[in-house]
Amino acid sequence: MVRAPCCEKMGLKKGPWTVEEDQVLVSYIHRHGHGNWRALPKQAGLLRCGKSCRLRWTNYLRPDIKRGNFSKEEEDVIVRLHELLGNRWSAIAARLPGRTDNEIKNVWHTHLKKRRKAIPEPGSQKPTREEAHSESCGGGGGASSAAEEETKHAILRDLRPAPPSPWRSCSELSSAATDSSNAASVKDEEHDGSLEFPGMAEFLWWAAPMSSEIPGTCADNFSESGGSSLPSSSGQRGEDLQASASSGEDDMDFWLRLLMEAGDFPELPSL
DNA sequence: AACACCTCCAACCGCCTGTGC
DNA sequence: AGCACAGGCGGTTGGAGGTGT
Image 1 (cartoon, rainbow, N blue to C red):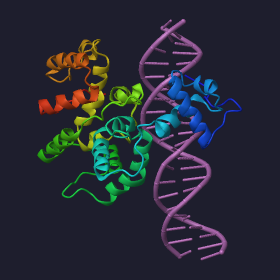
Image 2: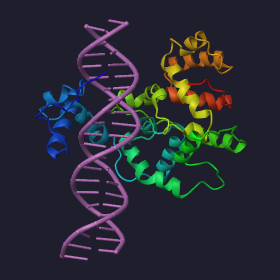
Image 3: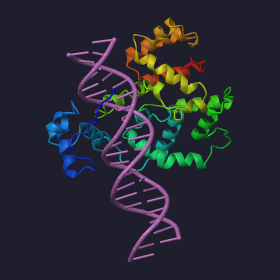
Image 4: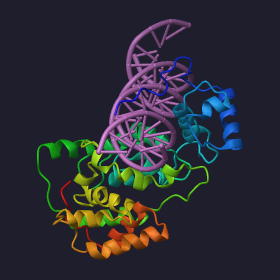
């Protein structure tokens, strides 16, 4: 689908926001909320496109934004979540209260990426993400070791979602599901968490959309379409899915919990 | 002091998905 | 079913400030 850029219209301001613009935007949202981002700038009297307003609000002006340096704990969480989720910044941000996907993305590219390259994990033969990708291009891959299994569980154990904020957008609250719906479009060179933990991450890519379609059950569709490689316990998991949906459990957390409870990482259907 | 280079981060851009008609 | 629109995501960029020479 082809669509003109939202800021194409002449007269719309671009570039850094001024204090005055910030004040206008904040006061407008406090008074009226942000029902329609595209209409907001006109109603608020801003010479900005709606997209720019939304970005400014979600990345900078939102009152629950936590500013300042990332703590060691936060960086650790980012590293581990990145190993699991890849470059799905919004999903990672959903588990770091007060942090935005843009901020996390910046931190990753400026600090953590380098750190990971500079300091390989002790005793680990795991390649960097980039290396993993290049290796994957050249073939390879094998069964995960017991140590890798333990690593998976260690990562999963610590994963908890950030508490919901009244200022978070719907997509942030449900980012795991939203993002996972994009799983198929994740760039090959980026979603290689599955290369470090063969099976595990791909399982998440594959599985999450199922839960997003509850109760239509993608699982049903899958089995109807001859999904012979569906995990053997899919029936039970289908029931769990519905239970998860009715309890409002976050999709990604549901799958993480499921994996922890199952204690196994089933063979995956090919994507 | 002046210049070049580097780092960081706010903001932009293009694309994708969901939704309503 | 197809289209248009809105929201959102992730990649990339540009400029300000910091650092090195």
